[in-house]
Length: 207
Image 1 (cartoon, rainbow, N blue to C red):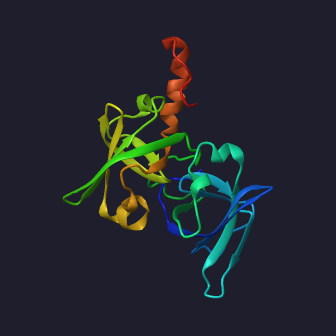
Image 2: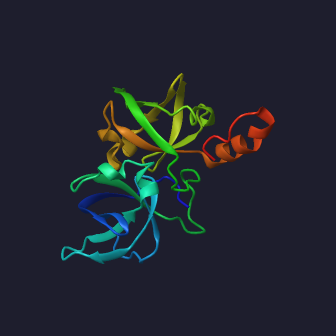
Image 3: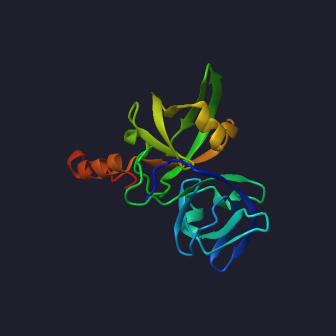
């Protein structure tokens, strides 16, 4: 479980297709990782396979994305040199500064527009139809692993208003129209939608 508060920007240094899946080697600031622990990479919960420390005391780790993960994320297109948002799993007693994030990417959204307005970086996302009913104005959404607030609802998605700190400490400031991003809807909204579906005569959404 995560909170959506990115605490490092990792650098992909190597990508390879292996029997374990698409393996990524990522440079990071973490030097005390453990094999088998969970880590969110652009919001996708992956398992640390190997880890270590470089001569310059920067850390590194490897993860592998299996075919089901590749089918619902952008990981298949990641290359050496790409930067990714990182968050380690929360511990009991940690401050929950964002919201409850599982690291299970629901689907991909497409950036339709970005604009700097005063001190806010506005990003419009086109969401898949199944995700749109789960969005509420000023509710929570996770985009590429970052806990964000829905600034406004759009007919085809949402608008995000990103503060300067988040823009500077994550990869969201690099977004341009046409980019695809990982989206995880609020888990509470997904459970409510699932519970109500039989009474509304609708499908089960993304739950």
